[in-house]
View 1 (tube, each protein chain N blue to C red):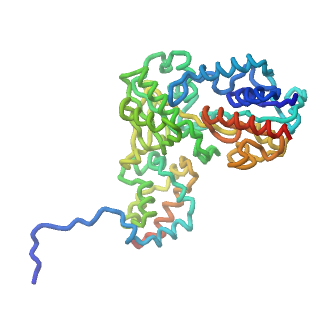
View 2 (view 1 turned 135 degrees about the vertical axis):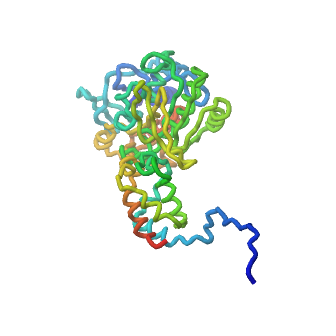
View 3 (view 1 turned 90 degrees about the horizontal axis):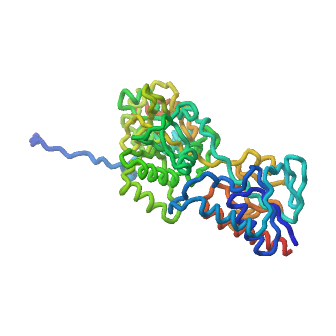
Length: 334
Length: 111
């Protein structure tokens, strides 16, 4: 039986493993964290349908268990070749092909110091909000309900100052989704979204955006917040240009939510170097061909699925993982 | 025969007329600082602008108008800039905005 090592147990890794197992190829998933599931763990609901993330993740986990697919946790890959993966503890795993599904790293909002994340109590990231929603308790730092909430798009995306020039794609729709959820939790609150461009690329996204505007009364202001400062009463004052009126704008909010982007993993560089993989200027790994060989790496026998190559949403990741399994199977038949 | 002034005037069209505007100066400016073309109009520069919070100066608007060939008054507007450089610190596209202000003043001094 041919064996494939899959690096990363997020949705991409699990879906690839399941599709390979169906074809009679033995998958082995390795995961650096102590629990499988990847970034979707701790996520509350998915756009644009408000489907609980656990519905997707739980199903995948269940099927992985059912199929008896081995998931090796606390195992960090530090090097790879098409036939082997070297772990941080020195162990070497061997197989017939390797699939890299190691995903992305969430942008650290503290780097954008001007927004005060980690400095002011009422500045949050989209990941914080999602976690709070999953825990069923969204409040300001002092435990009270917010009256006015601002979301800022493109934090750590499209920003040369933090070396992240790419668009993370999913934050726009996440911003719309979370704004709607906030409005649902706090119907009396005012919600403002500050954006540079709104990119609603997926099915149902534009409709959701329209619903947010029209039905939920969420205010969309076209301008990037330039800085945040604390007020005497513990709120956050923000400044932006309202570019559509051409005037500077300032306002105080109870909560400032930073929609953090996806950036490439730091270890992409060392993994790429160990296996002769091509890395894009963004830091993400580059497939052999963007159109006809988008699931293959530049090295024969090493494949990609999910956000290791670029920011993607869950649906795209799942679809790509199936395509990757197909490419792996064809490769192993040879 | 002297024209009788009935008190009516014809308003000049407000539209930016790209058939008539001469983009030569604009092209010159962009050739010297092509990075200005990367502007996505996020308004960060104007949001932090020291002059903009006190006067009608709007850096984003002025340089966008210049790029469209609307040079009238651009030099005078740019004179409001104090060259503090805060805009350059925040620009997500890494544009040397302070340099743009100086360049526009240099190129459009005679408009």
